[in-house]
Length: 228
Image (cartoon, rainbow, N blue to C red; front, top):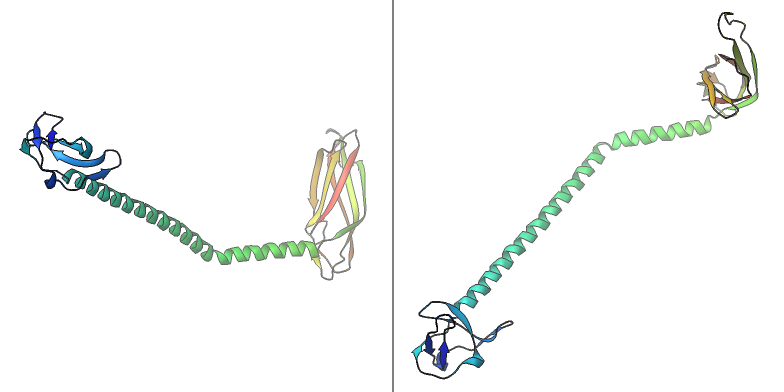
């Protein structure tokens, strides 16, 4: 068979029996990798283009394909190890975060438990110790203690009764009064302990509170609430 080097044009005569079985390549088809003795370059020889001739003998060279396959295998193993290490690192980071959160929750469990118990007690206390107001009245009078040289002032007087319908006595923090104008805008507000620290079970306690305010010429609304 006659073979011609595509790079330098040197021709060779090949004994077909010295060639191994043709290699299969997806892109190049069936053939052999050959190396020129003159220019030392390699090329792919398809089995269908081999012609008979007489010239210098040459041997088929399959080392290039072997090297290529070896490099691909090494590269695949290298990338595989990188992917495994990357996934392992991610798992370690996630595990560290989970462990840290678990330790933090475990260490603060008593604080959280105490806070929740305190909230529950506070809500239960507010529900069970709610007091009622009865016969709430208010009046607006001139301030007799006002200095004549100052602007005219008025006094808002609020009175009523506090009823404890619970079975236990309830501590009283005070009475809150809010005075609003006709547009529901707050004019003045105050909290008065009205001299009562607690209301016994079933007790009805009377209260009275007052506050001096600037004079006005419009209607007002007064809101009264009990703080227990």
